[in-house]
Length: 145
Image (cartoon, rainbow, N blue to C red):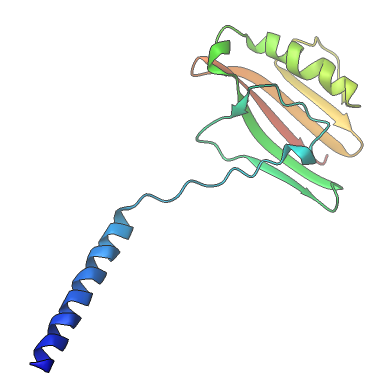
């Protein structure tokens, strides 16, 4: 009788383990955390209400007390701002704000240019704006020259 109980317990444990293993295999992978720490990039403007573009990898790295920084992020306009144009987004959210933060524009051009390059100390910031899926997306890429 004792051997029968032990065999039934072992069988029950094997069934539970098999069921839980299959359930874990069917579960989708957890979402990757968004580690954008804008406080490490105080001189790069983030337009109010704009969010990281879903489905893209975003990089925001600042090490050695901010001496080395890398940023690659795409920000999408809020859904309620489908009327904004890429040139208007650059004029409103990029040019004058970067200038106030100490950035210098590389080359000439208008504040409404949809591709702009800026420098500050040993960093180069490339900013582009274009319409994607009905909304404007501003892409920021910060790197050492």
